[in-house]
Image 1: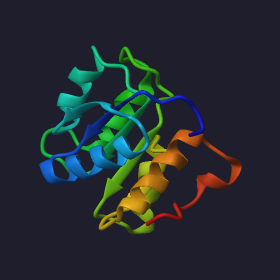
Image 2: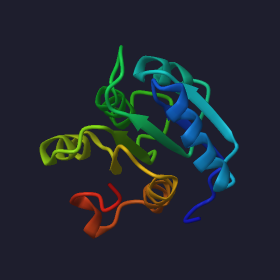
Image 3: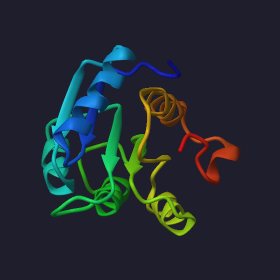
Length: 140
């Protein structure tokens, strides 16, 4: 793994998809996982839980993933504003992917995804930005 990762947060309104993500994280040895159903809940969790990566859905009731990402990147929360963020969404057009990257998303995956795709996306987000990663994501 590119860096030592012990803790993760999953922000997803679907309990089934949260479970899939937790299985992928477990396969990477990440077992300390906090969950949130939307961005508002995620912000509350981030006050007391310092994850090494956030895996987030875009479309959720309450605060969506883009707004939550913007809050994280603003530096106003008690978390690292450079925290790796992997977004998984059912929306895959180029304009939305660009909007997500502009908000601060590191890696964007388009549903439906496989375990292998999710695993690869997690590894890519943990590796950090590279000069070639500014464009579209190759895992979707």
